[in-house]
Length: 309
Image (tube, rainbow, N blue to C red; front, side, top):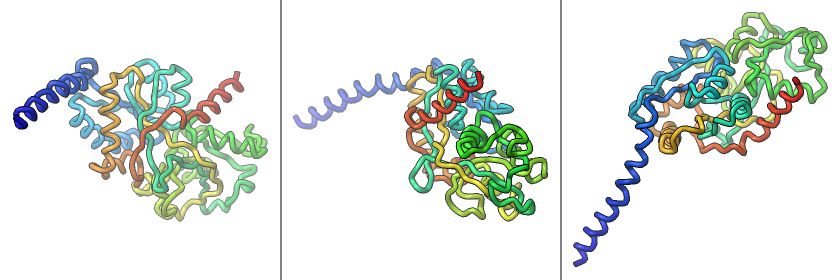
């Protein structure tokens, strides 16, 4: 009698679970391929190489083709998301805020977690060691390279912070000139090649400084042998900035969103080497992201837009 009862319960559970499983896979009939945008900021071959293993693992896990689309700059990904030409991207916080303001069509899914248990990073200003420039005060009369107008650490936050400290950013007022290098890697290279006296870029600000910290553009270049920390000074650091999220197109099926989120949360545990490749260093994982995390960045972007009108 007890055995028959358990058998009936088991069949009843299967009858409930089967429709749920079928519903969870419904999205495969709606989405034929997943299109991932790669923000500008380093050369295209390096970007594609960093995401190659990630692409193949995600494709195998989801069971649909996954394609990578590297953009020349941050704006390229933002515009393509708004036009429905991309499905997801790992955004900078400023690029995510800008895309959301443009179309309200993106939503955050996961955000990188740092070694101290927070989801924040910092912007830093770099100079060549042999320049003799070791402070922001000594930058007066020298040139500064921003990374990208849609980068939080490479423009939005440092420009706002410097203005609030009384520095006039008009060319010749404090800095001899400023300009956009085209990305974080390009900005650092411009300093190393003496095209600019300083640049701003992103880093976790945690870990061993001699290794380029634990994660970020600096660490990525150190790991690839493109930069030695002994050749540069870090002369300025911002306050905390929320890490950029992996952002999805809001109109994607709920089942696909859930599958991608589960994949990302598992990635640092199941494939740490791939996680380290795409995150440029050695972080500790991801946590679910919410819009609340980006409220202040959205406010800054909106204020900047209003001020430029």
